[in-house]
Length: 335
Image 1: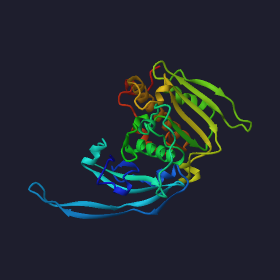
Image 2: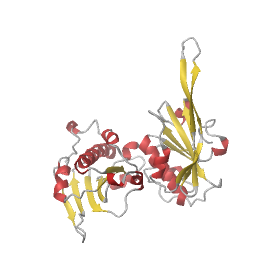
Image 3: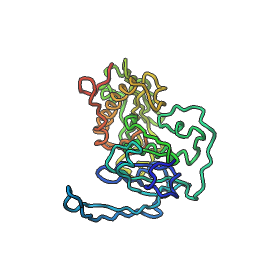
Image 4: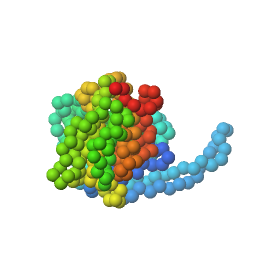
């Protein structure tokens, strides 16, 4: 049985349905798709029409502003399309456990109308995205798998939901997004970055320092803690930057990558859809620390921050990662 019956037209019911919360406005899907796929374009753009509807009933007076949406079709890579948006409200949101007043859905399917060929059942069901659980009988592969992985990343970024085949619910936890990358035109030596890391973990040290033959920096800084794992910063010059940066002015970023990542006490838990409580507590602290560290580094050398979903992360987004339960209220890790 597919979900969102009555919202998603019957001819699209079996497609993967990406449901994105509608907060201050609709989520711009095209830029998010362009962060993963090179061939993204509206084959038919959606249209939005605003209007007014008179409110009736003993308790209501006046006019309510309404908006109708005519779905469009967007090319998503070489083989797939996204059809939408379809407005989702009321009891349909409760049906998929999405606690927002309004959302919009996009159906992801093959452009030729055929079904994707899938592989055998997964050999392991441990993945933080819940893809192996959702497709326990036959795992998507190739381009279909990439579309699903993108949709999960988009749902995690926005607090949304993905319905695999229109019925298998995947609700990626936004708090599971921890790692960040800063791409800047300015190279810093290990001694310039180490004090920034030590502001969060006093025991941080240089783990490796091997400049490239042309003199570009290439090093690793490690900040170990007793309870929360380690923060690792890898710095190097790269030949390729994330696709999401392609939409920006080239002067906004550079070839020097500062990758900030968390290595928990038990790295295996990174692959679990439902990790332990201790892992979640440590993750919250480290998520806050890495976000603050990235903003601090960006304030010094400019550049653009990209999250582990491959999307550009704004300073406002990173500020929301601050853990309200951080020890002593200063966002420092336990050492």
